[in-house]
Image (tube, rainbow, N blue to C red; front, side):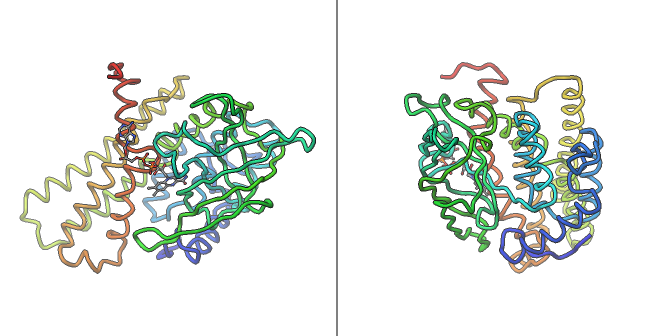
Amino acid sequence: MPSGLPSGDTREGFAAHLEWERALFAARWAVVSWPREHGGRDASAMEWLIFEEEYYRAGGPQRVTQNGIFLLAPTVFAFGTKEQRDRILPRMAAAQDLWCQGWSEPNAGSDLAGIQSKATRDEAAGGWRLAGQKTWTTRGAFCTHMFGLFRSDPETERHRGLTYFLVPLDAPGVTVRGFGRLDGDEGFAEVFLDDVFVADADVLGAVDQGWGVAMATATAERGLTLRSPGRFMATASRLTELWRASADQDDTRLRDAVVRAHIDAEAYRWQTFLTVTRMTDGEDLGAESSLTKVFWSELDIEMHELALELLGPDAETDESGWMKGYEFALSGPIYAGTNEIQRNVIAERVLGLPRR
Ligand SMILES: Cc1cc2nc3c(=O)[nH]c(=O)nc-3n(C[C@H](O)[C@H](O)[C@H](O)COP(=O)(O)OP(=O)(O)OC[C@H]3O[C@@H](n4cnc5c(N)ncnc54)[C@H](O)[C@@H]3O)c2cc1C
């Protein structure tokens, strides 16, 4: 396992992480749950969860290819043609093509159905012309490709008339402008599209049916694949070690809080096992992934806040990753759909409460 890699959200760190990603691929550990023909090991969902636990327990770094392998890939398996699967997945698994997510726009974040970027049919060329602006594109400045939603039918509104496109970022008309985050990393980008040609072969799912395709990606993002419990179990273990090493072991409030965090991480783990069992039995995760998203994002903050409390004044100068982790954890309730929106979804679609 590599240790002490710089943040994958910096240019230098991203390059270092890519070396690790490629080593994982060479040993066929990059995408264990994928079919063998695409570079995987045919692992079941339960086996994948065990792999993730062991990966993070061994100190494995977070995956900078995650928006491709964990978000786009499940969507390509579900909606892609055979030609798309064969062309896109092996290069994604090998960290040759690096994917970012182009959904949010300056005026469409929570209200994703309000996107204004357009796709205009170019019949003669056999494809589409894209125009508009995407923003908050994680690691967009370092990636080679973007998946994104565009309004393909100007006559329709909201969830209808959207199409899901796969866009090479070196296509003529694309401008990627990286910008910094509050924690100093430069991992965000704005992506400007000016009459960018995308061939029909790079439409994922049916034309004008992009919302349904995007919701499959969102379910993966909020639910299972983006944040497997292994990552939080590893954080809970590090937290327990930190507590053991701290001078404050007589502080029962802190001790109880550490125990609570551990129990919460375990609860998330068992809940995930339950979810996977239900999915294996053919059930759809759907709106319930919103419950999962609220839980893991709040748990991440809870654990990091506790760690900073245990570190006391040393937290300010901490270089072991707790402070950095805390700053990133604070964004958990925002990305993958804000927790306010998830609570709306839970209220209306899981609990069946009235909209008003
Ligand atoms: C670390 C990070 C990484 C990201 N990566 C990506 C990426 O790779 N690709 C991408 O496309 N996007 C990405 N995003 C963008 C993210 O999806 C949006 O920030 C998010 O959807 C919120 O949209 P917004 O920022 O426009 O806020 P707004 O939608 O303007 O929301 C502002 C506030 O109003 C609340 N609010 C809005 N509508 C409602 C409502 N109906 N009911 C209750 N409350 C409401 C929100 O919860 C929020 O608190 C990322 C964001 C972060 C923080």
